Amino acid sequence: CELPIGLDGELFKPGASGIRQSIGWTKENWVIGYVGRLAYVKGVDLLARAFTKIRRTLPQARLLFIGSGEEQGKLRSCLREELAQGIVRLEPDVPHASLPEWYRAMDLFVMPSRYENYSNAALEALACGVPTVGSQLDGSREALRGGELGELADPTDPTSVRISILRALAK
Image (tube, rainbow, N blue to C red; front, top):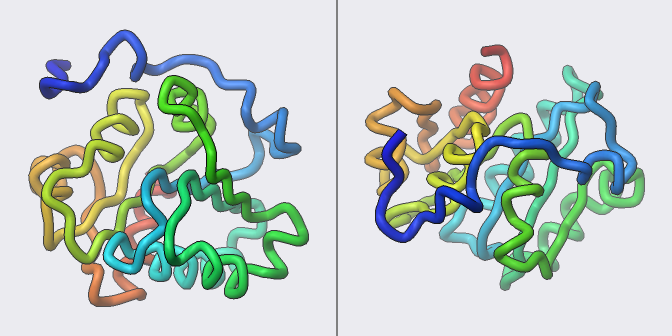
């Protein structure tokens, strides 16, 4: 697979990860992840809402946010119970060189941006072999080749985000 300019193919590639074990999650858990700035424009609120509904039918699901930003406090409030139970993790200070191991701990990467020129995080996840859900309204659509490389969700519709996640997990 040819990687875009600027994406380090020696760093971002499939491989093993000890992250799940180090945070107390197992291979039986379905880890849904996000990497990036925790901002409204990135749709992190949509991902949090979708996850709370997904957990009702998939109790083995886990949610991992890697990044920090202005929505961090709202996420902590919205997901207070899940954070306390260890079902959701927020990891604000992951060095760039460590990101591949975190991506490889995920069963699914989700970037439900309301606007994104081009998602490097989605490309990094794909390069690590992680299935991806992106937004159908932005640069993720191009990165995912119109849905050929991953599921596309409507970031104006939380139900669409949830359905795209469930569809991707079922593959």
